[in-house]
Length: 531
Image (cartoon, rainbow, N blue to C red):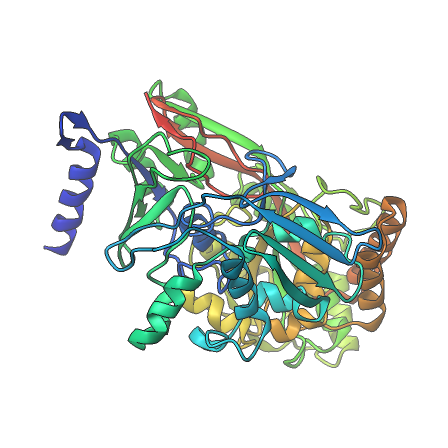
């Protein structure tokens, strides 16, 4: 009965309704997974970003749609002091918050909302700091708490952020999803009701779409925000039809149940190209898929074990069988499309004999038993975690390593791996701001171990020194040199097996216009239109 009710709801959405003589348009997006929350302060995955950061919220500055250029958003302008330690943001006037069935704002956006949003993450004294567990993986992983010295309210429409030290990628970091602006007035209402937990799952923002409802693991509904400062979206309603299976997403696209689907299966791409009702889009992905080894668990604290596993995995076979050639084998933690990528790094070759030799030197001549956690959802950097896990399992068996494959539902998978419960785990990353810091510091820095975004739990003094120095200098050539050296250390230490940099695909009905692939991996619907 539940399935029939969901299908009926989707049918009602696609057919639209008539109100006051105007037909309402609903755009249906077939997403691949369920969000972990509806607040990008407390999430890191692309699934949750699409469901909240790109729909419900805005930031002071944002990336121009389809590029990495920083443009005004909630701040109409900004200035930077000569010593690059003070950033003053001038807020746009007349910005309204969403009115929902659970909140009606009485005022427009002001500096108090900005300060509340950032102080929630950085100050333990903030009443919301511990709500939801108090884990701010991005904010802490990027060491923003130590970077920001103070946030000063200049006036109702001006905020100054004072830094303890220079940070070359700071403005780009401000455009990232985790720096979204929440409503302080809504937070105060929830405190009075003793319902603070609701702030992360019954959201209120300023974005192009207002949250309406969420049927867990099935459908998310939004309504267009007619008072959005950049103009009302071109569709009246937006729905995320949560569809984990790529083949099912394609079937829904063919029948018109969805207007756009994420991550089509590589096996379906040729059929999509041949379908006159479908447009297939593709673009270079700013991403990397990898297998992280937890260095806080034996035997992965042994460098020779990690190097042996790098030699034992046949990455080219994965590219052929899983990506069907729509990816490039990875050797670095950075994608080759980002500046400072070190192409002179030599990858570990697929070499069973070398892997066995290294295991013997490490004290494991007969191998050992371990686990690999396999991705439960389709991601741009790994379209089929289960199949990849099976191939990895077979490869490692050849060198005596017996692997048990484990998986969980997506929110649990992220939570448990962030806590370091895994031995080896399949994960990946799509860049958030086009800066190497977003990969190297966020995923591999020492502060990211505690924050939970460093899944290898790797903290290397020499690597850390290079990437921290690269944050503090503004000369591009010097930053490039530092990042290139850091990649050499990463390669030798081998905390990951980098697997692939994939091509991004999206498929949509031909009556969709106004959508384009975002180089930072988001699906953004503020300009989509149904012809």
